[in-house]
Amino acid sequence: MSSLAMSSTVDQQIVLHQFTPRHSVQARAMLGWSREDFSREALVEVDAIQHFESHGEVDDKTRLTLGFRLEAEGLVFFPGFAPGWGMSVRRPTAVMATAETAPRGIISRILGSAPASTAPATPQPNGA
Image 1: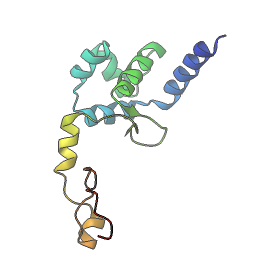
Image 2 (image 1 turned 135 degrees about the vertical axis):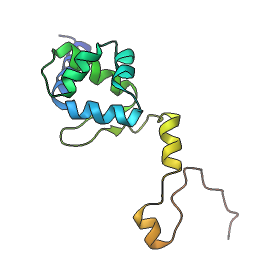
Image 3 (image 1 turned 120 degrees about the vertical axis):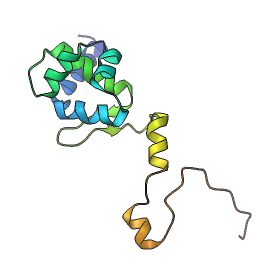
């Protein structure tokens, strides 16, 4: 078996074991997708998504399709944890706007500091 084929098989097994119905619900919420939106994006019937998210059994092809479609949006999945954003992926604009207007975290409020900025720091002249 070629390494590419083996890698694909390994990737599929990882998705089958790590991508759960709860992940699907949480990931859709992160993306702001309804089941109908997800259905259009993944080319999977709404009923199949609803069945999967209700902890019903679906075939491996459907589960892989759903998991890979969400991964294509930059989400990563690990058993026992909520989905997260991959390190090298740009988040959708709607998600970034929500994060920018979110209230300051507890640490920032306690320390009285502003939330961390994503803008690059302005270089200071030597000795400043």
